[in-house]
Amino acid sequence: MTSVISRVKNSVSHAGASSMSPSGRRERRTSKAAERVIPPEPVQQQPDGELTSTEASPALTAHNLARANKMVPKLSWDDRLAHDAESYAKILASTGKLEHSGNEVQGENLYMTTAEDAKFEDAIGQWMNEEKNYHGEKIGEGDLQATGHFTQCLWHSTTHVGMGKAKSGSGKTYIVARYSPRGNIQGGKPF
Image 1 (tube, rainbow, N blue to C red):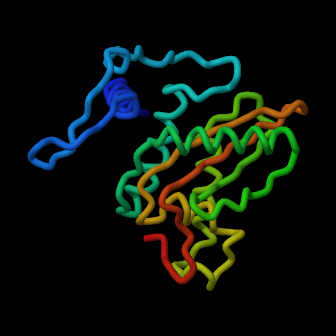
Image 2 (tube, helix red, strand yellow):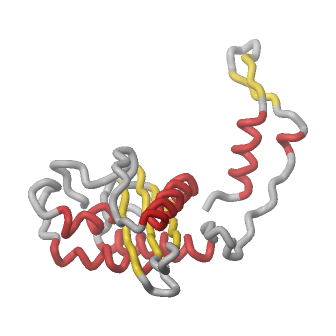
């Protein structure tokens, strides 16, 4: 999760003007409004379905436990990826279709369930179950439909993840995970 300090730094860096100093270094001037402290985000579930820290932490832990089992570096949570994932989950929920977005920049895993209290860890568990279908082949040599979620979760050069979910009018919950940099690169192996 983005810390309050980094959010403040981010808001300050976007609110200030910059100029060159006599020594040739870039200096940043900030307005008094940009120096205000931004309070922490609420931890309770929001009515519009926004992600809370109580959901993100177990999702990140589940990913990183699976990665540790294969000696793959840990992932970090990315709020931008989580926002993108939630936005796409809302589209899936509104259309009732479980289909990939076609986003070529971010990696993507999808999951749908009718369970009342769907959790990100449920989706991650299902994706990890694909391990039984993966036998060390390079991407493009095996059945990506049967292993692609698993290999994306564990892709060695992926460093960030964000997840989102949305519920349809018919009670289905759509969960989307977005990864950066994306994995499942043709001719590569996840670990």
